[in-house]
Amino acid sequence: MDVTEIKKLMKILDTTDVTEINLESDGTEISLKKDQNIANRMKQVSVVENVETASELEKEIKQLLSLNVGKVHLLPEMKIGKEIKENDVVAYIESVGTKTEVKSDVAGKISEVFVENGDIADFGKVLMEIEVK
Image (cartoon, rainbow, N blue to C red; front, side, top):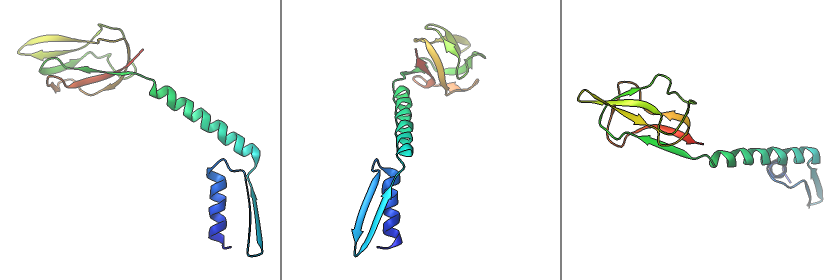
């Protein structure tokens, strides 16, 4: 048995739930054991990571779309992390000298802003994403 085969066995111990490997080949006996405390800690870390990932997947994201064509005027306080209520005005779209309000149709927190002041919005363009409460 050569060193590369032993390294492969060590990798199996390191990356799986296997805690012990015993092998005999051509008169050579190999016994590898993983410390149970380390194995238990690895399982705990894995469970915590999975719980955090699951909670992130449960978040509902709503896209706020432009219903007009024109120049975007975001309200200065509308930044990522800002809590907003349903029907809050978040921006105006100016077209032919007329400003039309852009209102949120959900309550939540702004998670992404896709436009800047002065950008031109087309009909249906995503202006921002809101993490729904």
